Length: 280
Ligand code: AMP
Ligand code: MN
Ligand code: MN
Ligand code: MN
Image (cartoon, rainbow, N blue to C red; front, top):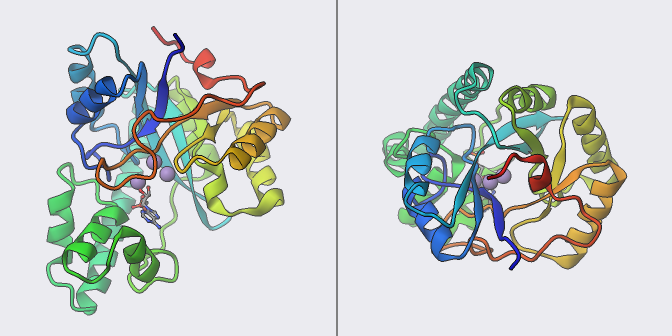
């Protein structure tokens, strides 16, 4: 029997809907063997996840995080897998990112209030039980208030760059993010590389710089699986000598492109990232 991995998921410690415990229970029911919890800019969900996984004998937790990075003025996500959440260097980096998130959330809320959406900040916090406020929480609020038909439309009209309530933010640099993950004993992975619409040259520049900083892997199989994308990411992994990861980027059981753990295997010739993780 081949092992099933899902190495990119979210709980309500960031913009996911399920608590860490609910997420792990769902992963176990879905037949996943290794699940990474990779909340945005936070490891706050990992303690609950570690305790929940003890009651689930067939499932192993890979402690992770997904860091927000600004690279040539664009938002890039770097996943860290197999991190020690107690690492002081990582935690001080996360503290910086959390401050930026709070400031940005105030800015977004102020813009939304100007557009007639009352109590935007307090309402977004209501969706974020651990106070890690994401644009997704504002998107849920906009849908709830009837200002957008769905999350995608809320991003399109209000929250994407150029949107009515968009607030720019300078996140970590690429080398900071890779360094924080590496110092925490983790493996740095470029999340969903095809989603940035960088074009072939810029994507190659990103992967080249990422490798020079100590980055080790890219996601080859991700949400909204497409075999052409997977094959081209597999070729890039080979070209840049990077390991290959698999992650659904699961957020919400009611509203997801890719179900938890329902991912195809890696294309032939990929070196799997789990070979570099000290998995039990
Ligand atoms: P943030 O980290 O607060 O900037 O929010 C980014 C998150 O918003 C991503 O991790 C996705 O979960 C979500 N997101 C970004 N773009 C979209 C979109 N077009 N539709 C739905 N969700 C999105
Ligand atoms: Mn998200
Ligand atoms: Mn992401
Ligand atoms: Mn994600």
